[in-house]
Amino acid sequence: MRIGPLTGPLYCCWLPSWLKPTPPHDVLPGLPGSAGAQGTDGLYAQFRWMAEHVPAFRVPGTHIHILTSPDQFYQAMKARIKTAKRRVVMASLYLGTGQLEQELVDCMEEALQRSQDNSHAPDLKVSILLDYTRGSRGQVNSRTMLLPLLQRFTSQMRVSLYHTPDLRGLLRLLVPQRFNETIGVQHIKVYLFDDSIIISGANLSDSYFTNRQDRYVLLENCREVADFFSDLVEAVGDISLQLQPNDSITMLEGMVHPYKGNREDFSAVARKRIMEVVDTAHMRQRLLNQSGRL
Image (cartoon, rainbow, N blue to C red; front, side, top):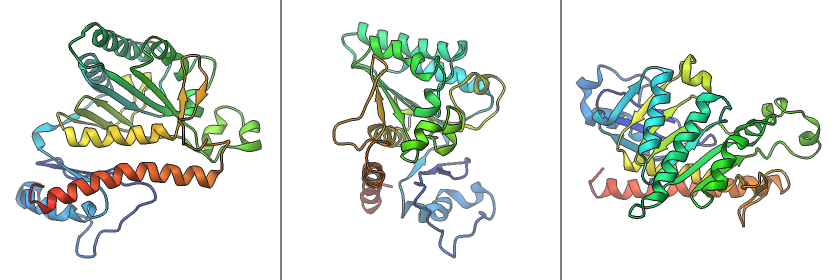
């Protein structure tokens, strides 16, 4: 993720780890002068090189809010979960098991129940993406926190657990819990509610809700950005293990198992699925740019 200056529009580009485009030689690392002095067109020119490689989004400055504390981050998530009507999409390393995390789960339950009770509204869909190894650590873990929701709202709830393809064979059998997380984990942090999204480095655990300061950028009513990140989390979820109501795990049909299947095949399928999202968004924006609407 790359984010441009926050005075005026925000330029938001998502860069896959295998794609690290280098800015052209005439674009300096720093932006001379203030954002206001350059104006929107000047800022767009500075960041346009990113948009040639990956999707880039222009967001009005009035839609951007900086959350300043862990509690503000936590309360913002709870409030938006409770009022979500179409979708809640949350990607994190793990979900903690304390009282604050349980209250977050309770907010999801309340929203899902309200959706079921309102026959005139479309069903709310909740999608959670976590890391398999971190989310399965211990007898009480992220999975056990979410199982009651999955059991009660099976058609509206999805829990995906990403498992690195590097942890396999004897290594997977011999390396104990906690230490196996050093092999590789899912680290996307996206907290999305209808068309608003919080981009942060914070996990879903009590320390990040109380005293562990992180960065929190709230983009309000930004449909294009929210759609992209929702599609991205769905794509990573598709190549992940799917948590079932009985606490078993399965793979979607047509996907390669991350540690039972061939590693190269898994990587190829994963890259193809994720790049479908990136390429679709990029092509849509190129068409808009050509038509003079971007």
